Image 1 (tube, rainbow, N blue to C red):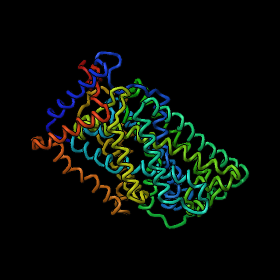
Image 2 (tube, rainbow, N blue to C red; image 1 turned 90 degrees about the vertical axis):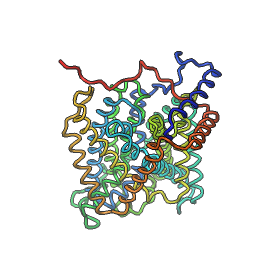
Image 3 (cartoon, one colour; image 1 turned 30 degrees about the vertical axis):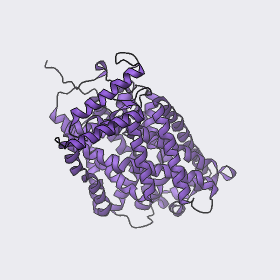
Image 4 (cartoon, rainbow, N blue to C red; image 1 turned 180 degrees about the horizontal axis):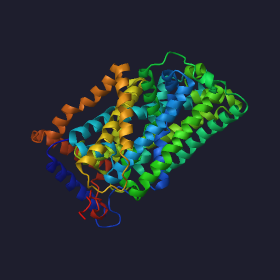
Length: 511
């Protein structure tokens, strides 16, 4: 985030040219060092589904039921949560093909509102949002893997942290080695996690067919465990939003998608309805075998479900959930590293993070930063208390981005938009967004206030790191030495962009 960009870039490019010369690469060859377009429609759907279906569906049912107050209303929250995600994803489809840059929310907000607002989203995402989400998913993975070995108690604290760290390190190595390896893991484990949820749904439907649906009967389903309030309902939606988070992650890797103007919206249209259907049916299946009280008391909902219905095959559930969360970790690492990459390319993070490996063309420095931040969060302690912080910041960033869509329509009405959604779509989303955040602030002012504080700590960082141009020479020299050392250690260079592949923002010509 140093203001003396010219010196830093010159230093980095000098080292880059030495590497290119030694590696025998020429910028005009087919082996040009750049992010590769290796994400087709199937992999695009796998990224969206794989990022949404991580640990949320195995953690959030308890929180949603607790805040919603009844089985029936919790199911309504799950369906409406998917509908809200569908509205948001339609808006992101328009933004993704209008501003065809990797980086998702950050890139769009930076383009529309300028550097400060974009940096605040980037800061909160890199500092807390994605490391915390990765840590929660990794801990869920380790808890489910170790649960069979500790049937009568929780797995040891050290064991869960060590296994979580090992998993994150392994998947970081995979993604550093090859983009194709990362996407193949995502494809395979997305299919695996869908099969795990399909197993839960099928077993649940068999239970319902046998007449075990007492908790789902209307007169029982809407019996409230505790008096409902608007604030508690808002928190129920925040818990559900954690399970649905990741629906916008394909927008972070737009530049690696084959034919993004076709495949980006197609993947969104396929994935969001599918996940909403699977989530709703999964919760119905849970209630076919567990009473509301049993679900609230369970530390591992899917494991309890398996123990009650699968008998000797109950071991299938923890393994299935572990595979699901393993794929979720891979997806979050893959996409969050591209956010760091995009931020560094805009000059909002150190330029070293905008470099990719000379041969594998993977953003190794960005991946290492995401890995390190996640491990630090794992060492802090109980990360589950951070879920509400993450959900609040997530929803805040979604609303700002979709408000940006409306502002951009007004600011640049003649800009070419291959997809243009009806204005009712972003307006409906923003109404829901405003109501949800308003009541969340009212119900949990400390939690939501902490989320805002985390985001606003980025303001002085932005003015010191980005806006302050004439820094002392010793600072710029230190940054240059660190960049040089990082290039040597990671064998990375700036991507060599092909001008023929750059899609400028164009406006409609006058008739």
